[in-house]
Each structure stands twice: as structure tokens, then as C-alpha cells.
Length: 476
Image (cartoon, rainbow, N blue to C red; front, top):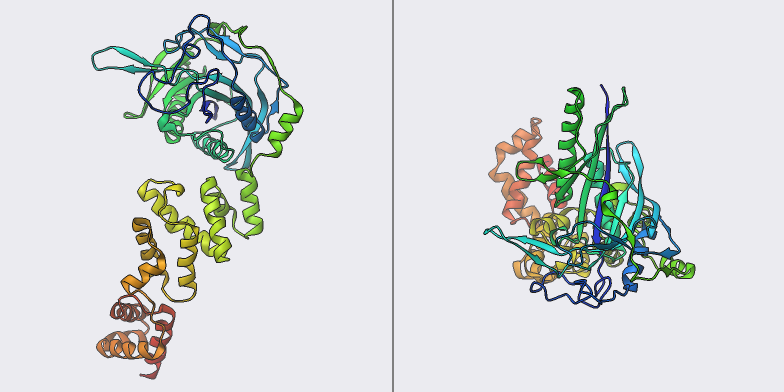
């Protein structure tokens, strides 16, 4: 039998406005519980919400970045679904007229570029946060209630956990590029739910859709999809089906667990919010927002390939974050060797960032310091290996590469007369290795060169050492 997995994602993204969606309370993560709230976001009687224009602009920016059509009229609706963490008993959202619709995002699928449809992006308010105590009580912090969100709903175009992970990475990078959200999953500013079912492509029989919640990382999304995929296929093979249900992901045991039966949209009982008047969205405003969008990741990747003659893989890695791409370009301006800069940024710089679990903005050194280090290497003042050691020191201390080289006496020895004496000494002490090399044992040459490097504490110019060793052996 042949099966096809069908996945759609619902992604909630908090917008980085200074204030909440309908009031002037601070939109800020953390803070003492229930200190960032007021009668409006608490939904007290008589409080009148007022739409945050900045949140509307950010939502339009997101829609344009994902190739959506933008509605010319904004209408807000009340979603009458039981929300224990919203005091007014309903959520302000959008029902039948989403702000953005019919967009897409392209990922690199197994068979090349693949377009993942985005059915809609709508604007809504976030809920408060329930806190469950060890004593069995539930407390609610309303600081998050009323924070502006966009909900991004994909078409069922995703067919694997890996495709979902790639889509989310691209989505996150784009949102950070246009600076509408920090997308910090650990702070809840990006949350994702998965809808999945499986179809038997030979018989056409489908499983019912399962919704998966409690996914706190992109890896968890991919792993949960793979788990559910196997579970659905197993049921089909047994002639059974899934219930329409919502399950939560247990990332300790790597399994999904039933939460509740999944209800339909009728349960939401949408109604127009009469306290918020419809807003006409001017076409000139939309055009102005579009004209001021920053360069997007895919466009930047193509430019890096074109302007810097980089392979697609290199360009993709370097544009995976806006900060990293800026760091690369600023270094190239000072170093004028894109491939060398690319190799170092993709290799040792990214390795250092990952090891320390920090972002580019947390680095203790800047593009000018990396350029200075690469200049020392190009001018043969230090070797490539010494350069790696210097970079590690820069990560730790933030010192200038020139100062580190000077303090530690790392200047490369390129004086041939000086190196000839060391080579002669090494050959004299390792006559058997010379004989082995002459008898065709090439590994002996590497040993001899290693001994020269050891004698110079790694400071000898390796190219010159290689040349001098070969010349000296030929003379023997």
C-alpha cells in the first residue's frame, strides 16, 4: 500500500508592538503577574477597545512578505468559545474576512522548490496564561491577555515532518527579517499547532484529522508529525480510523496523548464585535508598506549567489538570519574575499555561536575584528590553524586579533633561512622517516612536517615548511 501524509499548520505569532492590541498596556514579556493589564484587556463592563494601528501595520507587513492579498476592510469578530484565561468570556479575532489571504511560502523540498500555500493570516488578541500549582490550584496571569497576534493558517500542502520544520524555519526567518516578531518559542511569541491525517493513495480512504498541541520546538513539530503518521497508517492497515480529536505532545516519551474530542467551528459561535468599528484600509497605505519592506531571505539568498558568487548552500546558511547576513556583508566590505569570509562565518563563527548558545548580536567582537583576523591570515602573519585559536580567544575575551597575536607570540615564521635550520635538525633526528619516505611511505612526510611544526610551536608557515622539507630530502 502507498500512503500520503497531509499536514496543515496553525501558527500563532505575537507582534512586537509597544502596547497591546486594544489598549495602552505594555506589550512586554514577563513582569509581575497581573501588572500589565487594565479594564479594557480585562474586559470589564463599559470598557471600550481601540484598535492598535501599529499591530494592523505589522499584520499587513507579514501578509505582504508571504505574498498574500490584503483585504481593503478590516472587521473584528467575537469568538464565543470558553476561554478560562480571558475574563470577558470571548476572544476578539476574525472570522469570515481575514486581513490576509491566498499567500504562499517556498521551501526547498526533496524534488526542488515547493510552494506551501497560506490560506489566511488574521489578527487577534492573545489569551492570559494559566499557571497550575502543585497544590492543584490554577492561577491566571492576565499580562499576556490582549497582546496582538497573527494566526497563520497553511493549506494542507505539507507532506512530512521535515517539510514542516523547513516551512517553520523559513517562516520564522522571514518574520524576524521584517521585524514584526522576535519569534521566541521559549517565551511563547511563536506557537504552532499541527493538523494531520493520512490517505491511502490506492483506495482513497482517509483517516480523520488529528490536531496536535503543546509543541515547543520545530524539532518537536517534526517528531510529532512522524509519530502521528505511523499511528494513522497503522490504523488504516487494521481497517480502523482515528476520531476527530485534539492530542498533546509528550516530549519526554515522544508520544501524543488524547486531550479531548475535536469540535467544529460552530462551537466558536462567531459574532461581529460591535464595539470595534470596521476599518477601511487604504490601497496607498498598503503600497507604502510594501515599498518599505526590507530585503527578504529568498531575495537576499539569490543576491548573495549573484553578487558574491556563492553556492546556493552557502548563501542559504548565511541568510538564515538577518543579523548573520549583515555580519557577513560588513566583513566582506572590509576583507573583499567573499568565499574566505563565507567559510569562516559558516564554520568557526557559527560553531562558536552554537557552542555558546548565543546570537550574532551577543558576540564580543564585530565584523571589523573578523576582517582583521582574516587579513592576518592572508598576509601569512599567522597560519589558518592559529587563526582558529585566535578566534576562540576573541569569543571569550572580545580582544582584538592583533593584540592576541602579539600577547601570545603567534606571529608566523616565514623566514626561510630560519626554517631551513629547524628542518635540517628535524631530518637529522628522524633519519628513519626520511628513508621511509624515499621508500614510498608518503605518511612519513606528514610526520616530518609535523615535527617541524612542533619544534616551532605551530608558528612555522606550513607551505614553506612543506617546500623546504622536500628540497632537503632530495638533497640527501
